[in-house]
Amino acid sequence: MNTFAWGFDNKCHSKILETLNNSTINIKVWVKQIEKKQPNLCKNIYFYNDLFLKNKFHIHSQAPSSIIKQLEPDLLEFLLMQARHQVNYCATEKIISKTPEEDLNSFYKFIHFFYHLLKTEKIKLVLFANIFHEGADFILYKLAKVMKIRTILCYQSIFPNKFIIIESIEEF
Image (cartoon, rainbow, N blue to C red; front, top):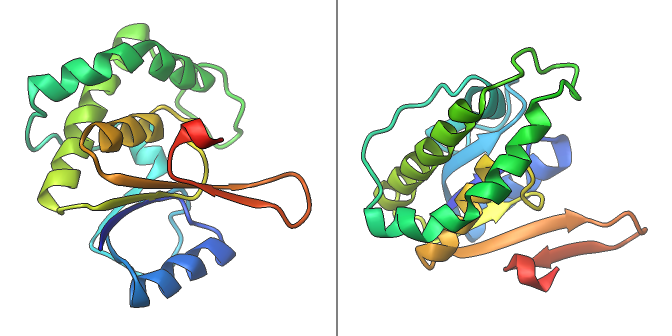
């Protein structure tokens, strides 16, 4: 099953992807945070800082206007998630204080970027290591839902031995 994986950077998580990639899924796209050497599970690897902070990605095609219209009601929630990058909470974030116009532009760029990847790679599953909270991952989740692509969200509970796996945020 062609899969778009979001996260799964740390030692344990990358082992999960390696195991699944050899038996159940075919990872076609991987967005991860850590740029150090890790298993080369697919040809389309994108890094967190490039997507979120530097906006270093190319738009190859436009998403249909019908898809964009379905996602526009989620703009405010996206902007609220993006706002966390307006203040330097994370010591590694060197680029902060984007303008509202830049965030608005990012909303549409992410829709087009992810739409292109989901279509060209024939993605059937979007697998998240965590519940979306960054903005871009939220757009990916919403876009997958609009396109009727299966999603799986993972979440490590603060309670011992409790790990949550859901297919829709409404289950959380």
